[in-house]
Image 1 (cartoon, one colour):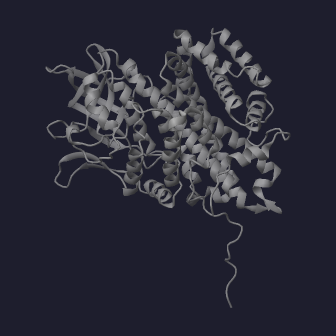
Image 2 (cartoon, rainbow, N blue to C red):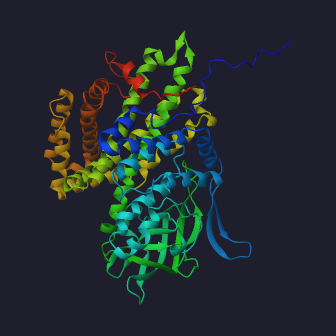
Image 3 (tube, rainbow, N blue to C red):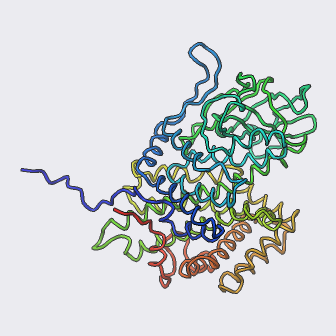
Amino acid sequence: MAATTHTVTNQPPPLVGYDVFASDRALTEGVARYVAGARLEEVREELGVLGRAAGSAHAQRWGAQANDHPPVLRTHDRYGHRIDEVEFHPAWHRLLGHAVAAGLTDAWARPDGHLRRTAGFLVWTQAEAGHGCPLSMTHAAVPALRAEPDLAAEWEPLLTSRIYDRELRPAAEKGGALAGMAMTEKQGGSDVRALTTRAEPLAASGEYVLTGHKWFCSAPMSDAFLVLAQAPGGLTCFLLPRVLPDGSRNAFRIQRLKDKLGDRSNASAEVEFDGRTWVRRVGEEGRGVATIIEMVAATRADCVSASAAVMRQAVAQALHHTAYREAFGGRLIDKPLMRNVLADLALESEAATTLALRLAAAYDGGTEQDRHFLRLAVPAAKYWVTKRCTPVVTEALECLGGNGYAEESGMPRLLRAAPLNSIWEGAGNVQALDVLRALRREPEALNAFLTEIGTARGADHRLDRAIRGMLTELADLEGIEARARRLVERMALVLQGSLLVRHAPPEVADAFCASRLGGDAGAAFGTLPHTLDLAAVVARARPVVDL
């Protein structure tokens, strides 16, 4: 007699074999909004290829394998020679190689480059978040290096190459290169002006040697690193090549890899410089922060995109699960209370995606107005979107119940990844204080920000009221530091509301303004007003899979 006790019923099929790009309407509509018409089909095809790869079974398998087999530090070879190398699972190299080949380090010189790259980054890192770090660092190093034209001429073609060359060799022998960054130290953290690493000039112009340490070094397997050190003229930015022009290894001592909460596929290290570590100056002595700030701004924008990607994948998994799972006489997705939760999560995800694309479009615009807008919009967006990521993923995981708490669902990996971008490149307080700094020093930035949100004035009374409240907060900067988080949160929400009112369907904009700007919602997800068109919000966000 055949056993029947293990017949599997009422379980959803895996979310696999779908186009991550095409199934995301907020993303596809955003790309169409900003890409010039003549190039739109080309960009759609490019992102569609990447989206189908990201949703494939093999990409999902690579992501799981890369996290199940974290990188390993090899300080010495079998003969006792110091090598300081980081070994990765083959899945990591496949993920990173696919991303480089898809142009995710190439944005600065091609038409719509930032918009293409941001959309691609948002799509591809849904397969695995950890390898987004070297992609981000490599992309962001380009504008900093341009402060030194000779260095930019040598390294920019390698950093923007579509060739993934994982071997450590001199730059002149490589077809492509990756860049990392090492700024913070044990004693200072985000206070980089307190760092103690020393740079001593050599006889050759622009060449120095370093003595010191770095508490966090991103992507230590990279070919080059931007670092800050104290030169005779003050805090200065330097380029540290991993391999010297003669083929010998630079004195780059990896002390250990960090044992991290999430993104375990990616290596972060503590490194030391022993007085022989050879570097080249980037920009002027004493202008280190001003030089590297372009890299920091670009990586902060990537933190927004990365959080949007994690949110989107978590929400997609929740929508997919509840569309197939039945309980209490019907599909979960059709139950009014679950629908409220899903719609609330979908709003947060769409608002994050829409804002990430707006930042990318401003980078592509390149005007003075765009630059001033980004000066405030980037830290405000980085502050708010990254902070919303963890509660979104937590609630999405709960939609799967006990299935979501199991590692094989992939949801715990998303949850562990969620807090990272709020911490990286300056945690919440750093972003809030940076907004205050811009408000005090750069009035053009506030004018550009107000011009942006002002284009939606009169379209929704709750948005108009929120703008007035924000302006009241801005009118009094006395003692503002203690309430900086409150102000920056309002600025980010008003900016998101302005974008959704202008570009999203009415049901999405209405729900966002009612709950985020009008105060008609509770503290938890799933407390939207029941009179809203929540079914339409959920249907818009659901990933379409041909099963």
